[in-house]
Image (cartoon, rainbow, N blue to C red):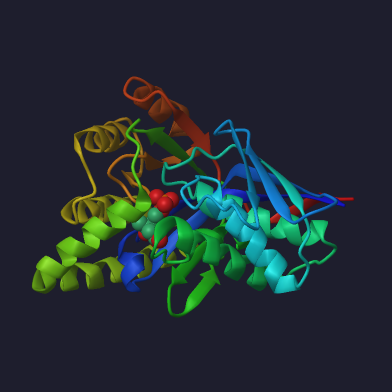
Length: 322
Ligand code: PMV
């Protein structure tokens, strides 16, 4: 038995970091996907994992589980899925992802979601989206320590969502066809978990300053949701710019990110900001479809990786099951 599943990457349009402390945030699915192939083997329980992107392979057995491995969260997602459905089989897992890792595009969340879906399908069980998202969240906890849950949710459901930790998500009814997203890589690697810890420590040092900022960020996300549903992309762009200022205030920007953001704005973006944990990774620029190439061209002078993407309606999908 084999199955392949895929899940989209994501861009947080507004609200990252603030979402960790239960403020609302808005995420959209991108048309870049992570694919995971799971094959059920014969014999002793073990999970063989290969990442085509990281160019590494590792075997996890009952007696040998390397928790330091970058592949451990994938092992964990597959193992948790098998425990949930009550079948333990040896597996071979191959990951092939178009989503740049550690870049703010939810690569680990998408891989976790696709791993859960492919593992369950390979074992002959078709899980509902709620179960897929919840099991992937458990693997995200291993990667990030305290994830908000937004990554696994958008990777499972696709399209555009407003998300709040304690309330879950609502799908935003939106027509994104007039706009494209231009993403530019700062080239600086960073760890989401580390950035989240730093922001929380700053918040704890300055509660009287940070608490109102967090509330304002929550209001901003609600306004941005309304702008999206009204198709008012100029307003959405402006709100993204304000949100970028808030992310600078909590300490996740730097010179490289600021340059990318300002070049994007100057060359015609409706709005531009850090996306994801910051400290490095990508910026996102919201552009009218006809302006996107011009913005991308300006960013290519500063960034080795510029991606022009559109919002994808589709969440997790089982591609094939034999
Ligand atoms: O950079 P990413 O794709 O890992 O996104 C992180 C988003 C945060 O809000 C900073 C953390 C979270 O768990 O929501």
